[in-house]
Amino acid sequence: MDKERRVIRSSRSQPTLEGAGVHLHRALGFAEVPLFDPFLLLDDFRADQPDQYLAGFPWHPHRGIETITYVLKGEVTHGDSLGNTGTIGPGDVQWMTAGSGIIHQEMPHGDREGRMYGFQLWANLPAHDKMMAPRYREVTAGQIPKALLPGGVEVKVICGRLGEVVGPVQDIVSAPEYLDVSVPDGTTFTHPTRPGHTLFAYIIGGTGNFGATRTPAENRDLLLFDDGEALTVVGKHGGLRFLLISGRPLAEPVAWRGPIVMNTHEELEQAFREYREGTFIKRSPL
Image 1 (cartoon, rainbow, N blue to C red):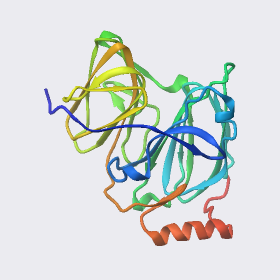
Image 2: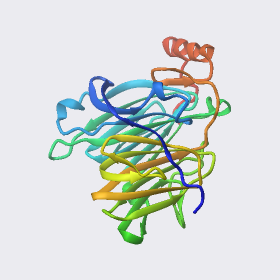
Image 3: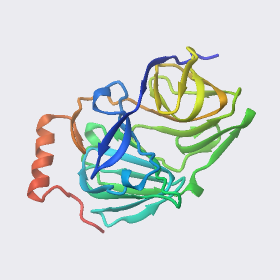
């Protein structure tokens, strides 16, 4: 077998409040920079009570990053300064490149049982793309292909490639891979990985063993792997579901405050100054 990746860091997502009072679990954030480069943040906003999420994320700016929102239950209504509006539901993805600057809001709504389940990932943009034109892509569940592998393994390919199955989100700077993987009890899933790319897994259901270390993990565990050419995962005790995410590291300085991520403190100050003065948006709606 090619060099199998090992778990080098294991942690639990932590409860926190964001937006206007949304209860969520933060799997990675500021404290993990630069370990997860090019990724900055992963929030798990699964909640069963409407008062934990209905306040949502009212209008706020972003610059210098991409935000990827993946919904499992309920809906998220979106609007932004480019004039985009829409609602994503179960299995849908919103991939937003903030680039030079965008102001948007995301307002969650539960399903009939009051459940709102989803995840938001932030991916950094390299210095030469920080001020690129903003763009917004809404990908429906029906557009996300599924790979069916031996042993009953199912993989939804949101971004990247698994064999001949190619995800619908392409032309992304950090060449990311974003997979939603389900592995039955007792089944082994071996996945080729790009050497030199950061790779991590976030467990969203069940239990399993990961990597050459066979590290056990369960719901809301975050695992970071060392470099290598393959990852092996074994489903345990009723099966396992996890998000598998990888990308090419940028190896650049990170200046981060709130919803804006730049390379220098001066660029960060300029962004907030422009936001205060009303010159933050560089591209007008079409």
